Amino acid sequence: MIRLAIQKSGRLSEDSLNLIRECGISFVSSTYKLKTEATNFPLEILFLRDDDIPGYVQDGVADLGIVGQNVLVEAGHPELEVEALGFSKCRLSLAIPRGANYTSVADLQGLNIATSYPEILGRYLAGEGVQAQLHTISGSVEIAPSIGLADAICDIVSSGSTLLGNGLREVETVFRSEAVLIATQNLSAEKQEILDQLRFRMQAVRRARRNKYIILNAPQSALEAVFALLPGIKSPTVTPLAEEGWVSVQSVVNEDDFWHITGQLKAVGAEGILVLPIEKMIS
Image (spheres, rainbow, N blue to C red):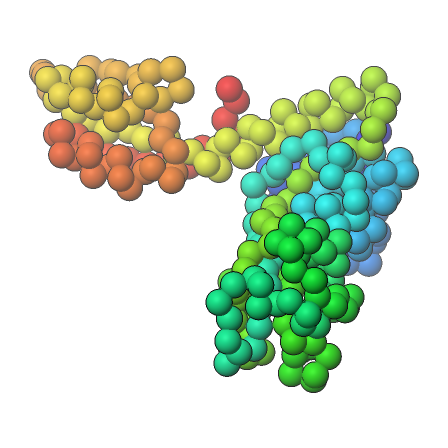
């Protein structure tokens, strides 16, 4: 049995649980339970405060954890990171009152800045040669300028709507973050094998999310041009159609490139283009 710690509530918790379920691991979760066991995989899940997860993993109370990079780095344990997971992306940014003048990070010299991430912000400002007074706040950082506690803030930003709602504007990105899988050091051989199996499943799910399965019809005379656009995993699959001179082509396309490639495929004569989701993708 391997023990995995995840955030007990919030978006990161939901995304983490969805990933585990997509890995084919079944479990029952409840808002009232602080731990649960999988029924078809040797995994126990602990539901903790996100700030506590790096310490639990560092101390070996939990073998694994899923946590934001911002929390991991702020806690001083970046060496625990095993793999970036590609979801819950956000940024740690500096923001000032909307009407304040700002030209560069040097304008923060001598100001009071409220933040929940004094370690990350302190290193950033030191690297920029800026000295400021940092006030550590555990929550509701955005309110600090309006109540006179600080001249600026540094906090996690996703869409920026919370900043706007509190009369602030984003001026500098200090740190970019996403969810990461972390592991205690010196796992036993048995637990390392379970971790390897879990990572294998996670990677298959993540590849599937990033790619689409595409099927199209094309004239045989256009195959060379189609192949140039659809490299696939090794090479596209080609099947002759009943209509002479035409073939069906099947391949995998990265979702980020899909719309651009689709336009190019149509330009070289492709027709009847179908796009399908991929449940798992194993390389």
